[in-house]
Length: 263
Image (cartoon, rainbow, N blue to C red; front, side):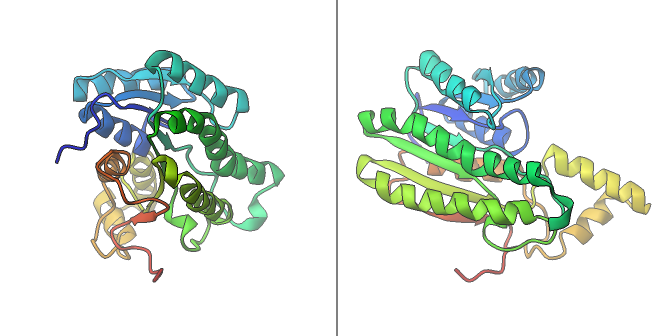
């Protein structure tokens, strides 16, 4: 299927690794022009080289801390300078620390709000005027299944993620007449570098093989395995493409069937 992404201009947050990296790779493979953003400049440059090697197309790395107002402003301004506009925003800022309620002080609650709601609302405010002027825009948020149902030990995500989903739903209704589609992807468990390292550490602590730990960990996933980040990339590129012309305001779980919610 041709997605019509050739020449489309995209900015992807949290793209030096994990799900953001996978989305950037999928966009580049479809012929999009892609700015990748992350805080660590060295990791970002390494990711840029790896993405070019894998796809044959070089992304543009721009270091940015998405919890910072000035950094978000600079990211959008530099992207506009480099690409001449923005057609696609992939809002991906990572998640707040895990832990139960009493383990978190005020600073972690503020971080959760800044990471989730603060970053995406500000980025949308910065990119939407130009999307409206050109009559095309696609905004895709990478959220979490923690925005859809309560998950033990993730109270910061359970509190902040639903706010992001509510924002996207309302924004989608406001922007529909301008051909700006707004959707949210809610990943479950994925084998990112972080997850791989965590699995190794926990398997070593218990004195078992990594494969055994992953089998146990995946026991409540109907498909029986963690996801591959490329699967998020595939979903994101469709939602971000012109071929997606009728899905907006959706919060789509991609979790191997893990969530139990009915609606």
